Length: 366
Image (tube, rainbow, N blue to C red; front, top):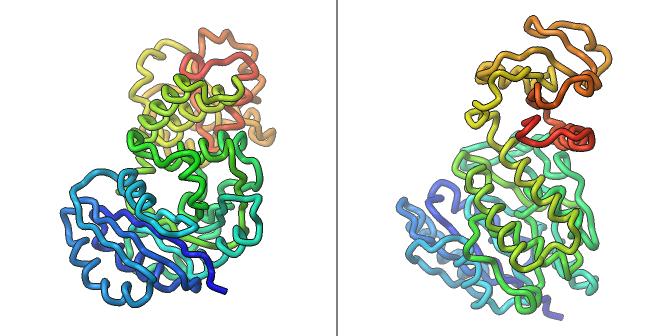
């Protein structure tokens, strides 16, 4: 019995260093019945020639190969073109600088083919901070495993997505094509197009997390999705779009989305304090005394009055000449007289604690 056809759609832009390993990872899939729809989105480097150099092996490997060397229109446009042209039962979109593990498509298709109450499947993988063309076992670090950063879930994950959206395992996702036919395609007005798609699709379709290593996401300094300004612009456009369409089913969903915007601005901006000049004259309190503080203290432009920390073993100790107090010390202070700077990777938990105690983001803490 012939297995379902899978349509893999790849958009490439100035990835001459990485496009060959990406395409080779597609050819190395253990799943046979694949068509490849490939778009070179106006690259100005040697991406086009790299793709041409591997065209014959790709034609021999895949059921169908369509290649379009075109003007730059953006990844969402290319994905949508590919979906409309596709003939497969399943859709996988992919960036040309990442790598798919050999068993990825087979594992995803096997699950969806045998579980018709699910329409979308995804799995685990690694972030790899490397500009090297070849990635080996020693480059795969456990702390950079997707599931080491966030715990993934299955089923109705719509509400859960508001908590982990930027950490979604984008590189591993496989869709039934019917999802796009029923709910529409990527929003071409958004740069980080996948996050909007997941939120929309998760309102109707069930997702399955497969606990297998399926992809490698390459971090090389040019990733659009990791640019905080790009992400903030996308999130703000999504918020405007969702408000106009009454998208949020609960007020709590909207609050979580706004919190996501705040998190993006604060955490992904890596300590950009340029917007905080108005807090001068207030008592500055640092929350956190570990490695995050050590990393950012040299670029922090304000004088810290004292620190707070949740670790009792640090109470009454000094850090850089400033006393460390329990976090409850903040409740003694007048909110309008202080400003709290969070120097901790546990930003979500601290954010929640401060909100619960009546502190407002940007007004009382950052």
